[in-house]
Structure formats: structure tokens, C-alpha cells
Length: 97
Ligand SMILES: [Zn+2]
Image (cartoon, rainbow, N blue to C red; front, side, top):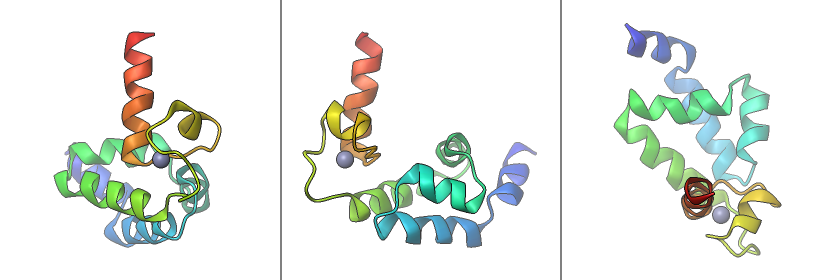
């Protein structure tokens, strides 16, 4: 039931739209706002669709700012980068904090 609801609130057309925006370099929070989605919902959708996590990470990596030092808390916090490397560092910092 939960997955059907998730599918309905975050349909494939919207997922494709989000991936396009991210790959074009739009920030995750901005892209979500433009599409009327919450970042939380976008992340949570990985639970219902395993491939989504990979698609999301690929788009975030493709659209990330090449000028930033990725895999650093600074890129995550100050530049708002949400690529897999920056998220991993941020999550690790939070866990040990
Ligand atoms: Zn990054």
C-alpha cells in the first residue's frame, strides 16, 4: 500500500523531471521546491524503488559543481552539494557528532 501511495505522489514523469534538473546542475532543494516535492520524500523513495537511489546519485554526480572539493563537509554545508560523496561525509560527521 505504502509503495502504491509513494508511486502516486512521486510518479515516473516527475522523477524524470527531477533527474533532468539535477543533472543540469540545479540544487536538490531548489529542484524539489520547483516540483512541489520534499527532499525527504525524494530520499525515502529509495525504499520503494532500489534503482531510484542509483538514478538519483548519478544525476547528482552529473550535475555537481566541478569547482567544489567533493567529499567534504564544506561542500555539503556551504555549497549545498548533495552528491553521494558529500552526503557520505556529512552522514559520517553526524554519526560521530
Ligand atoms: Zn559533492
